[in-house]
Length: 263
Image 1 (cartoon, helix red, strand yellow):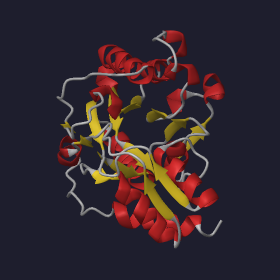
Image 2: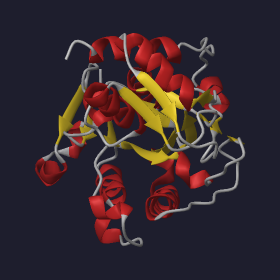
Image 3: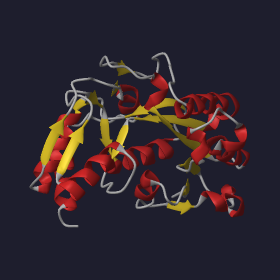
């Protein structure tokens, strides 16, 4: 079976992908020492930190750089983008791949520019994957679940400054890795959403994590709803001819709480 390359040795999703068969992983700093021609597919999980803090410049666009290398070596390329390209809304909205884009920070603006460049120049050998909120065991990681885990572990409390009724789309890292593997093996092109297609209240996320941990308090200091979204994954499910699975995310979150209590 053909081998595939992951760029980004410190990446959360990259390391989960590397557990699967026929994947090699390499640090971004070493990409020019890698023979891309020996790979059937390439996925980038690396990022230049300033990509999140300044206006677009091709010099800081790691996705485009690796996509070009992949294309020159006849490799299929997968870019991990973000649901943020659809915008930010206090109203609960469901976004499909055809929804208007409305990036709202440097990161989402730059990702959208990069998406367009890659599709325009390498579109016959590239796929853009717009992911929803990725989660897993993330103690110490700067993410929503990492924020919850750090609070619970260090203070036995989870405190939110926005409404617990806020709904967001979450997908676990293991499922994401398996889906990305299928996308690469099928050599899909175009744009696809990778998500659960479900809006889970963030208050329930905290409470399920506490339940798994076995102790802790949940506090909410605001009724303000911010940044709600559901990311529709129908296109990907149909393309891969998969059956949409029941919603198991709450059980996964409780299991993460159980793992947290062992540390």
